Length: 333
Ligand SMILES: [Zn+2]
Image (cartoon, helix red, strand yellow):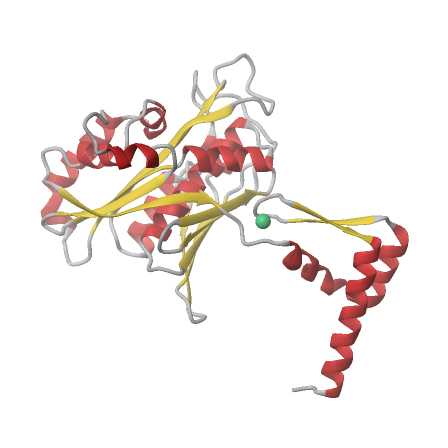
């Protein structure tokens, strides 16, 4: 499928990336992503069950695609708050110009449900279909926009499509999938398994184009989507995002790909930031903490990284806090 591609292509083929573009007539926007490594990193970092790995991987894929619709240095946070046992899922995508950074977490990463059908993880069951999807876009300069829509199934892709259609009036189709190897093994519980393929495809009718006049094209796109089948399987087989775009517009028209960017699991946390989160304890509690335990751990929700601080470091930080407080008392501006 990737025969005859220029050789600079092969280097990039090892990493996750996303392509986006418009059909030549400007009617449809398309985004296609491979997120195999990102989904696997989410699973590994949060030590999730297989079904939660699929739910988180789908959410991260959606966050990457939403971020790709934004300008450089803008970001989007997707919160899938369903009534299922996984609890809420938060996925953030940041458009950093030369790449898209994603990170995310799940309230209860290790819950598991029986398979819905042979080989079919019950993502909708684990997330829950009663609840809301909230999408917050940070457009820079403290300009925030939050929209929401009722969850439709908890299957993530359908929920994002519904959000766009009702909340942003952009008729949208989304197909996202994460293939977990070992899902067919006896029993559905446990943390075994790994991601062998993950990706997403999103098609939108652009503003100013009435979907009613495009019903023929939309029907064709829908039948092409059905023909493509699970995106996760296609990614596992080595199909490229570019190939998905071509397949989805077969018989509809040609799409001009305008952008091609790597996607990485990436967090904003650091030792300094982690230490600063302890400031809410206040100086006295910090000193007590340093007296009670040899080291203090701060865990980043988003990436599950653990930062350890010695009692000595905690004491030093408590002193820094006192100095800062004294300064602000002298100069309360
Ligand atoms: Zn982090």
